[in-house]
Amino acid sequence: MGKEFANNNKTYMAKAEDVERKWYIVNAEGIALGRLASQVAMILAGKNKPTYTPHVDCGDHVIIINCDKVLLTGKKLEQKYYRYHTGYIGGLKEIQYKKLMSEKPDFAVYRAIKGMLPKTPLGRKMLTKLRVYKGSEHNHQAQQPIELKIEG
Picture 1 (spheres, rainbow, N blue to C red):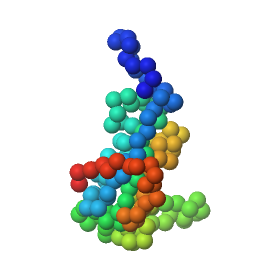
Picture 2 (picture 1 turned 30 degrees about the horizontal axis):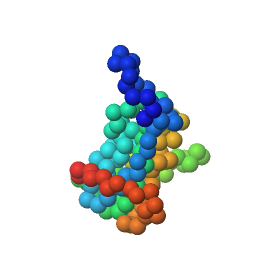
Picture 3 (picture 1 turned 90 degrees about the horizontal axis):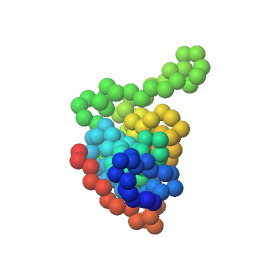
């Protein structure tokens, strides 16, 4: 962390080179999509740390496994749509979440978390620390991730 809080009347501001990053692993099985996304976005931004500084990427790395078993409450599977535009005239496309969750659940989780991060260069840098996997297998054992429990 560099210099400790030597002078009590100064506000501590983290520096990019002093940030210590941890690796967390989250099992998304049985957790609501929005609840998972909001808590993971907080970790990616570093808001769970006492040394959080708004203009510095203080966040940790997050690995999400079993994203195909994430829950959508209510009638969201039938009523919610993922919409995007191709850029051409009449190019609005929409995919029902029922189809999206069956074909690309990792994309649905990724987009939910992306929507909760800042839409700035710093937010895009935070998003690079996110890894999402369909099954329970991942290739980040060497980083020795800490298991993180999210209340669902």
